[in-house]
Every structure is written in structure tokens, then in C-alpha cells.
Length: 390
Image (cartoon, rainbow, N blue to C red; front, side):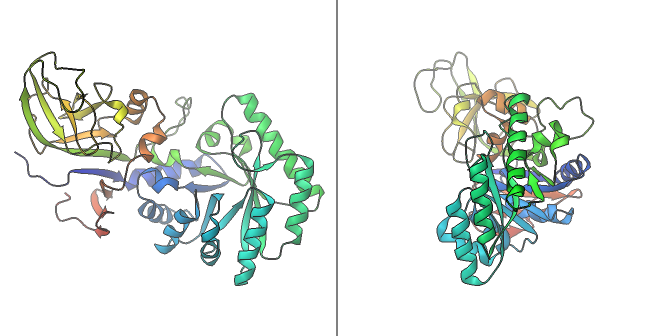
């Protein structure tokens, strides 16, 4: 029996992360803004930001002010663009920490102006435009552009430094319509005396699919973490999966045919089976939707199907056809022996969700230059080198 260490953990390859960042930089002449929202797609935002900073990144993007403040508290320098609407109770702290904020309506501009003026600090603001995605942003018509320009010129402390939108990525025709809408809005602002040089539209998919639209910058998130844009397989660049979500086998038991495994009573075993219990569940980020054979894990290089319902803290898999499985073995749940594409297909979702649903409970173990460089246990608020990481 192998020694028991962590119940569930995530191995993260910082060398592959840095390589993916360099790939993004090679694919454009524009600034690469690294999107590390949602805890850097499950990887741990602070450690990822430090790695990317070491690789040369000076521009980051997050979803909310709290994510930006976490990075500043950890000493991350450079631009941090908050792409969502700023939470009112945190505006003062956002200004204090020099976050770049997003305005999606006139009230946002005025609120940022008030918060920045109270501290006597000039804060950069990017204007978000709804070009057909219909999520956040100013409406992309001439009258709205005039109102934005007039308001911006009246502000002293909120400096409108950028203009952006999001592609829907539904069809090339709709994407082109969005591009044209953003360009019209940019032109209308200029006609009204508000000239903005920093204009951006493309994400990881746009980086690859629409090089002619890179403009001042591209916002790259998923590609950094090994989520290669679909329909880019023919292009000559590498995109490495950076994460492996793993769990320990806690027990292995013989269960006769006809018995029920775990919760529920509608799927009795059809044969005598060897069932392994893993120290992981949907509370750690393994989708409950992958219960009853929909999902598989990799143990000793072979696939073991999920048996019964995935529990919050544990799950069971059938290892009858995998010789020698024992307590202490490692199971790959995502990454490693289970490619991102496979889990996304089984779960009926996209690869981004498979990564970002990973919770704070799994310990994150960071590897670089062939060795373990840090272990982060967020529940114990501990970081540093593990005693038994190798």
C-alpha cells in the first residue's frame, strides 16, 4: 500500500503556462493582456500572475474588483483591468490600488469620477460597448457615443483611456458586424472630440481567428491554460494543457453483482466488481453530471468509469478491469490521463467550465524547471515548499 498524502490536489506546470504566454505573444504584434479571472481558470491567480510577470507580462485582466485587489495585495504590479462593473462598496479601494476600471453606462463614469476625485487620483477607465453580444455596455449608436464623449470631456479624475467589446463568436458574419459596430462607435467618439487609441475586441479565439482585428491589444485567457481554440488545429503553434486535477484512492472493495453503490437505487451492479473510492467529489470541482458511467478517471494508465452518483466529498469508480489498483494510488480526473476535451464532451460543457469549477479545497502544487516550487493550501492559508512533494 502506498503512503497517503493529499486527498486531492492539482498539479500545475508553470513552464507550460509561460510557454503558452510566449505563443500568444508570437501570434500578435499587439499587447497581450493576460486574463486571469476566476482564480486564473482554477490555477490560482496570484501564483499564475507571478509566473506571467516573470515571463514579461505587464498587463492583466480580471472580472471584478475583488479579483484585482487580491493581485495587488500579493504585490502584482502593472495594469490590472477590471472588465466587469465595479462594485460600489469597493470603488474607493479600487482607486487606491490603481485598478483600471470599466464603465458600461454614464452612471459608472460618474461614480468612478467621484471616487477618484475624493482621493485626488486619476484613474484609467475603459468604456465597454454592446456591439451585439447584449451583455454589458453602452449601446452602439451615434447618440450614445455623443453622450459618452461629452461626459468624458467633463471628467477630471476618470480618464477614458480605452474602448472595448466582446465577440459573440457565433458566425464570421456576426463577428464582422460586431467589429464594424465597434469601429463606428470609435469613429463617432472621435468626431465628438474623444480620441481613444487603446481599442480591443479579441480574446483567445479572436487572437487566432481574426489577426486583422488585434488593434492595440488582445485579451488572452483560455489559451494560456492549454485550451486551444477550436478549428485552429491546422495552425502551427503549440498550446499545452497546464493543469492535472488528481485524487487519491482511499479504499478498494469487492462488491457483488446486484448491489447498489453510493446514493440512489436505480443502477445495481451487473457483475461482481472491484470498486475504488476516491477522495474527491463535486465539492472539489468534479461535475456531479458525470455520475453513473458518464465520466471516467485514469488510474495506472487505464480508464475507470464512475459508478453511482458523485458525492460532495467522494466518488466511486469501477477498477475491475485494472489489475493491482490499491489504496494510495493516484487517479487523474482532468488533465494528465484525461484530456480537457474528453471531460468537456462527457459533461456536455466547454473546457473553460471544467477548469474554473475547481474549488479552493484541492491543494495546488506548482512545478517549474523540473521541480516542485510551491504548494498552496488555501484552506490553511499556507504556501511554500511541501515536505513530500517529490
